[in-house]
Amino acid sequence: MPYESESGSPRCLVREQKETKVFVSLFSLLSRSRASVFENGIRIFHHDERGTASPIFENLRVRELFILLFLYHTHTYTFFYYQQMEEEGVPSTALREVSLLQMLSESAFIVRLLKVEHVEEDGKAMLYLVFEYLNQDLKHFMDETGRGPANPLPKSTVQNFMYQLLLGTAHLHKHGVMHRDLKPQNLLVDKAQNVLKIADLGLGRAFSVPVKSYTHEIVTLWYRAPEVLLGGSHYSTPVDIWSVGCIFAEMARKQPLFPGDSELQQLLHIFKLLGTPNETVWPGVTKLRDWHEFPQWKAQDLAKIVPQLDENGIDLLQQMLEFDPAKRIHATEALEHPYFADLEKTQFAKIEEQFEKENRVSVNAQ
Image 1 (cartoon, rainbow, N blue to C red):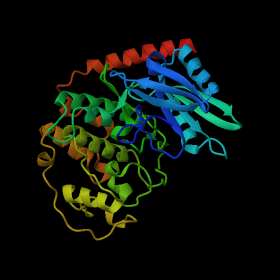
Image 2: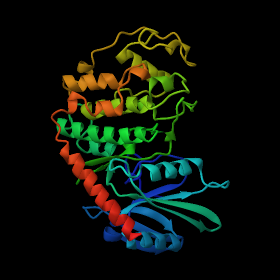
Image 3: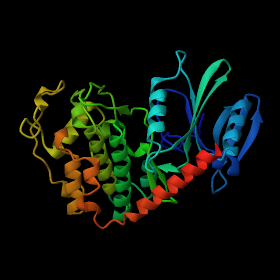
Image 4: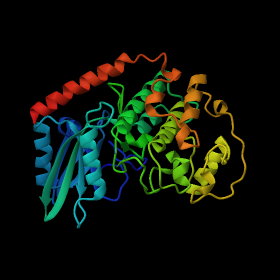
């Protein structure tokens, strides 16, 4: 099993699902790790800067080690993802994620799927997905400088990462894909390059017009849009924009905006802050499946809730947190918002140029 941090998450990438999954940096594995052979297999240790050894692979079979070495020698210094398939075949979430990632990997702001390997191990089918390497997620990045409003991120960092998040989200939506699980744990950060990328498309769905009926069991509660919380099954890309808004506020104030512990509590958190919606504010809200007579709250001043944002930042946040999905700002519109007026945008063109260069090298190496 992978080494787990204090938060209970794998060292490299948070990914909480029922299937057995392991993430490991091949570069760290082969440049700074040591392997020991035990009766039950090979154990590989990661050595951090202080020399502390932590097991990142337990009970590793020789064949799996050969796969790791093969990937290393094909120059894919990446996360290594291991999944045991279900008895009835490849899990639908894995197939969905692979197909979406293959389609979306042309963006510098979506984690790149480099290789898919299907092997037989002890009579069981195994699926290996190899992703490009990024050294942490946004949640870990924010926690490094301390939690809470007393430890804010610099405005320039919030602006920069928000713009990249919107670039990635716009790319998803342009290609007809909803992510449906945007949260800090699913956004990967390369600190050295100051790059943020969207990851974990296991709940992603291609959408069509007219919008189909989808499950409402999506997205971690804190980032879940109200139309989903109220039982709506016909939803589209605005659910991602709501999540982006929640992440925006969390980056600015270093605290989750709506930390509910149940669907009802989540709705109450939202209504207490943004006011209880009605048919005037959100036509059709009272006809949603899980609508009830809620307490009547008035909207609070977002500038007092997120004082770290300037006037333009508050305006952008308000447009992302509109109750009516039809009124919520689009990702492409958000990229043109005055909040980003003083952001040096040529840096993102350079990121894309570097990404395309690496892409060509990767293709030629295969």
